[in-house]
Image (cartoon, rainbow, N blue to C red; front, side, top):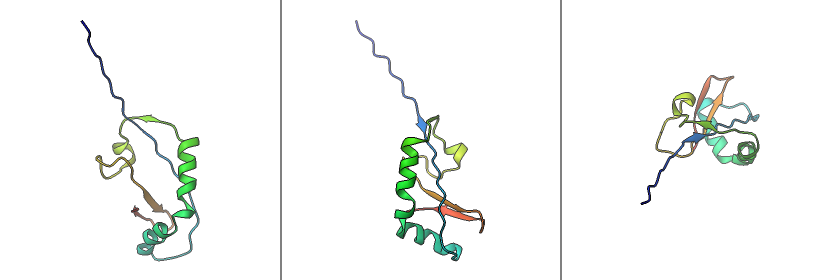
Length: 88
């Protein structure tokens, strides 16, 4: 007789990079970042694969992400303007 035992463990990685952008109004930042993803996307991907560590759990409670059904989300935050949002 055979018995199959299964387990799933959920892990997440949170990766952050910081870039410099020109001065602009808060409502222009999202469009600028989406149109200029070459300024941050590769840096984020590299850091994700080389430096970020897995942490147990979904990460949604700790990191304040918005949609537990999404497998990837991108956020931005401008500390100088105290403004941020979601990309894409």
